[in-house]
Length: 246
Ligand code: SAH
Image 1 (cartoon, rainbow, N blue to C red):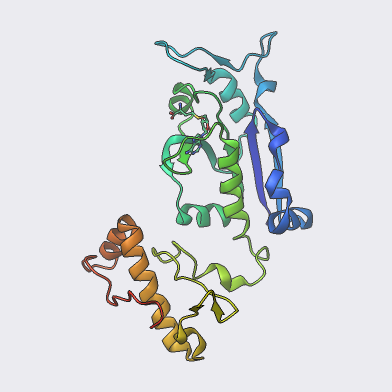
Image 2: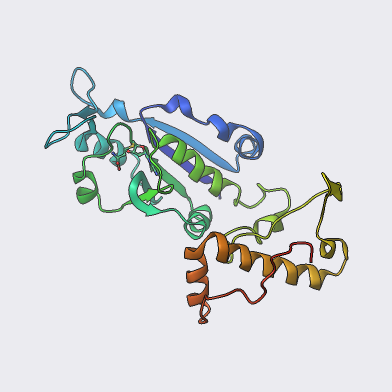
């Protein structure tokens, strides 16, 4: 089964963009996933093909019209999840990405200007509102590209070494451990000795400890959740590795 992506946008020319290159691009050529764009403006029925209007209540910018958006969304009604990109949505997680990647694909609605008329979400309650994070982009397209990139690399056969996805950041609720590569010494800094020991159990233990320490220090929010999921207090890492050379 291929992963079918449909992007509803005012700027179809932004696609495939970065998704046509490297890993995602090769997978697209192979047919491991497919991409279709829908021009939202095609669903504006007035003579000027108007997609937006001024915000009710006043204020800067323009708001995308509910009737035009709904017509665009309805035109691709099928079994795939429909996601609207908006900073007001639920922050995307790797778990949601994994879920999407194992399904039939996704329909992604990209906003512009000040965003969507809220009544779209009331009238089409199956639309899931998702956010790329606590930042404001000028449009939903870069967010759609990021979301699709995250999904595509998980499609079986897309990533070279199948296992390289399993240990990554967020997959176990932790950040990934730090990585190193040759040369052994660079600007006077060496690679932690344990990584050259050839002792797989020791390497695994060191990596787990580093994952826990870095998550606790860099992402207290993730660390808190990790602790509560495992039913133990998230107050301190089991292994307090400050010196990464140990
Ligand atoms: N006025 C809106 C922001 C509009 S930005 C607000 O303050 O919430 C214009 C469009 O960019 C949005 O409709 C959305 O599609 C996209 N966008 C901006 N930031 C985003 C984010 N963090 N995640 C997903 N989409 C985003």
